Length: 350
Image (cartoon, rainbow, N blue to C red):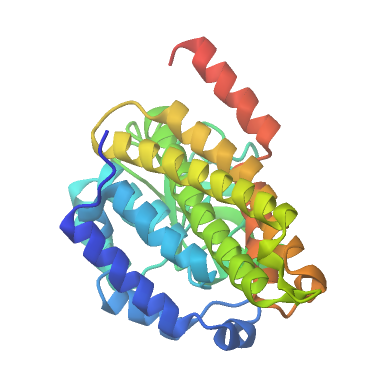
């Protein structure tokens, strides 16, 4: 295994870091409220950081999402890259790739993901989709939604008036422009062949594992950003004439958080590297998701705790990392749920 970024991946990561640092400021994030930042989204797409994901691979995307997580930038970057760019590139037909990828790359097409599979979503004999998905992150930003139905087949449905889809605004722990999706004989195309035979469990499992890996990478960035803020605070905040960072208890908490963050990062890197290399990676994606869920919530709690009373201020930047870390914990699944699925997958030998 070699997790050293290629020259293209490193350049893309550095460019993303500059854009996020310039535009995802505390003031702009506070002004955005629970919505996304269209100017930041335009800048990312204009720099080619969505279109480049197909070439950079999942490891490249994880590197980019780390930079988003460091700033908790409010754009549908993870969703549209995972459920749009990578899903269509890997499982779409030639016609679908030619029609959809340019729009996804330039940001005019934004794809959200109704994942995992929803037992209440089913296709009808006429080819429409019906059912409800209670929570879809970044749905309010999306022009399309990738839906996994009860049979674990993948469908791409357009959003908007006259499409048989309804989007109801909901609030999550983190401000992810989420919505409740209602489908009423919504016209949808299978992702893959016209008959939908290539949209079964194999494609579903790949997209789900890709999403778990990518969102684990996002969590690594969230945790790194939280810890960086805590380190800066404890180095400058004095108590009884000494910086808080000189206290052994503070050092131990920060060290544990650093080790947890590195565990999230390296397991996400390994899963992404294996996908890019064409190797089995489902168990590795679940391992990354477990670390991101279990360790991630520990790190963001530590980041907030090390800020003392300031960490309880909902307007403090570190509180946003806390909200994102808890939301990613919920989105990836609780640690016990992920661990059970991982054990079942290992026992099955798949």
